[in-house]
Amino acid sequence: MKAKVPALILAGSRPGGDPLARHAGVPHKAAIPIAGRPMLTRVAEALAGSDRVGEIAVSIDDPAAAGAAVGLGGLRVLPPATTPSLSVAAAIKTLGTPLLVTTADHVLLLSGWVDHFLEHLPDAGVAVAVARSEIVMAAAAETKRTFLRFRGGAYSGCNLFYFRDASALGAIEMWRRVEMHRKRPLKLLGVLGPIAVARHLLGRLTLEQALAMLGQKAGTRIGVVEMPFGESAIDVDKPDDLDLVERIIERRAASAV
Image (cartoon, rainbow, N blue to C red; front, side, top):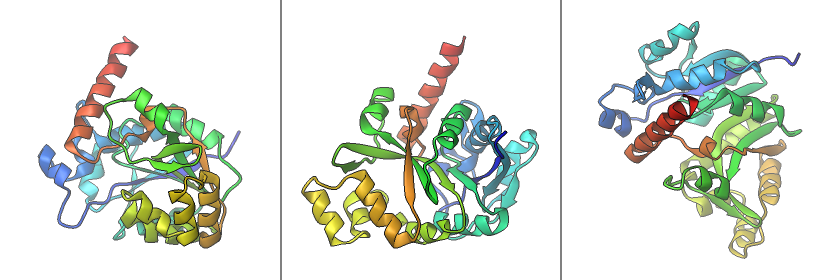
């Protein structure tokens, strides 16, 4: 039997509070109810439902907001840092590696997705879950995602990350540098240098080439797991996302009857 992997849920708040939490009328984004249950609870339940996941921790600035998941046996609460990447770096010092990471707004997460990700990990220090644009749009044509376009396909991140060993710390430092550009693909590629940008503009940059360049700068190999689940690329960043995930969860419930 394979060893269980500890998991971290990122649930920090933006400076000054989260506008989506204010929209929903709750004190913390992780406490926003989705079909009657807080986002954090849904994510924690999905992780707990995987036989591959061990201890579950949450990086959150408001421990009271984590109380909704106490019914799962409790979550280990860790203080967040100023950015998601620094929160992961701090968690690795406490929880060690390997470490599975996701986010509290990944409310559609299913245990089967977690299993698929962990069962298809590449031989790399860091692995990132992605889904092709056509799979995402086939699952939810109304979603508005940011896709990174490469020769051979366009991809969206799926908020699942795996840090195998200490070499991953170099990738976290690179993450810290690029996280401010996550919604601006060209600026994101700019971190890799002018050659990467030129190849991208000419339509010649493949995902594999981009990952190799990123890994070289980070000092570790970075790989991806392509997820066959289009909904795995959907998280909750804005009011429209709230409506969308509510509809998807309602469809799931109806199909299960």
